Length: 132
Figure 1 (cartoon, rainbow, N blue to C red):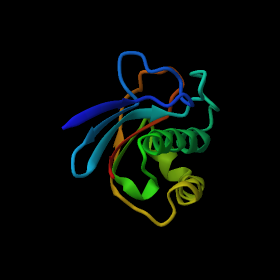
Figure 2: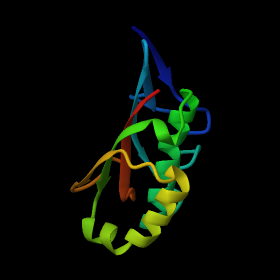
Figure 3: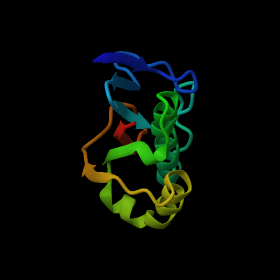
């Protein structure tokens, strides 16, 4: 089984991890590292929860597209948040962003509240698995 690291130029340089790892056989299996709401320069796009969610999901999809897939290939999402109450409060905006980016595709998902994330100021991190 061939393996390829997927690090899109549109994302900040990965340090100590890969944005994605693609395994190719009859089907391709892509593991996308946790993505936060930062831009290609490694700066958070906003202190706003919904804005960070949108950008984190955009970053996940950038890795999937770079590996040759699309939103419909995403089989699993794990969403880590520092405040599940804030997630619930912003569900409407999060849902709008989700549907804009993912359409009506709803993979297996988990939401996990964590004490903190590695990057200061990050409120949400999303990791994924895609099958192509």
